[in-house]
Amino acid sequence: MKKQRPTIPIAEWKLATHLEATREIQNQKGVPAYGCDCEWCFNWKHCLKVLLPEELQGQLTRVGVELDHPTDLYKYESDENGSSIRVVYHAVGKILEGPNQWKSTDMGEMLMYSTIREQPYLSLVVFPQSQSHDEAPVLKNTSAGELVRIDLRLAIPNEVLKSNVPSLA
Image (cartoon, rainbow, N blue to C red; front, side, top):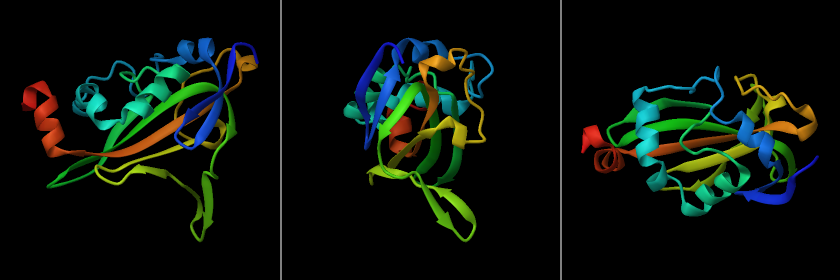
């Protein structure tokens, strides 16, 4: 693979990343969050710098991910304290090392997220897109590597929304 950075960390994983190919798949037309102006995509753009640790922001940016433009983003839970969202990004390259992403259970294979922070909750898993059934960008240059899915689950406390989102301030 050309133009690789052999060891860019993302939490507990290390990726060999094809930077040019990763940049080409960012904000791609046809992925679920492309051009989305829903409430949660809007909230994410205003809160991500507060919600994501600086180190993780830097790691994702070094890989070539555009933080403002996830592949997919949706709310999956809420209560009186806030909401939980799932944010998905993609890169191109190869996973060099990291924890096992799958666990066999009575119900089948389960994706295992690594907890980055307990409060407000943030977890992440990195795995080959070929192991996912969810939508992804189209990778035209398969010689650049494979699509790598960077999948985050995090809590957004109500006070973070109120102090960072213009319409809620």
